[in-house]
Amino acid sequence: MIYLKNAQQIECMRKAGAILFEVLCRLREAIKPGMSTAELDVYAEQLIRKHKAIPSFLDYNGYPASICASLNEEVVHGIPADNVIIQEGDVLSVDCGLILDGWQSDSAFTVGVGQISPEKQKLIQVTEECFFKGVRQAIAGNHVGDIGHAVQEHAESHGYGVIRDLTGHGIGRNMHEEPSIPNFGKAGHGVKLRPGMALAIEPMIAMGDWRVEELEDGWTIVTADSSICSHYEHTIVVNENGLPELLSYPGFALTEEAQ
Image: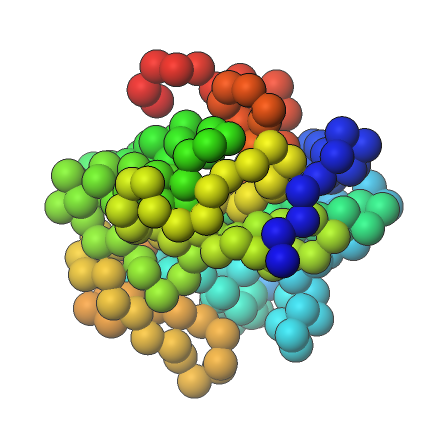
């Protein structure tokens, strides 16, 4: 079932999103070569709880941390650990969620650690562009397929693979709600978008092939060909008229122009 959010509920999600935005900004600033992903996770939990919010990832279906920290060929769900050290030249994706007064927000970014190659930097940039291409299709009356088609078209125009086994999702009181938001698809197909739908749109784009594998830890997803992957996500809400609002990116206003 798809739950439409009213104005009061959207305001609750807006407050959660503002806190998550601040948390991720702090995490981005903290990332440096030589630190462990466990250190980053501890810092994330401290920041979240400082705002009287709850880390939504922690203990979710048994997940043991407050963030996912995915390095290089890891697509998503990389488990932070003391022995996983962030190195100069790495590509690190950080995914994080929190709950404030019962309402969820979910967001992710990918960053190059220190000096990275132009090829890696382009992948990160195009992944963010894919998000903005997709989110501009999150208009009442459009379909879920319009979002995925826009993401896929832009990624593949650069020769990249669009991860197909993992998708975005609805969000609200639960982290994962209906509908699923694939990053590929046919325009005009799928669930029709309606005002009040809150969605987490999250392109996962690989430098190589789109196929993935799960590691023995039961969580970490990696590209099957070991190619570098990038991930970018925000929580958004479909408006009555016009472009959606990015609930986890306060102050950012979408325009009709291409990102």
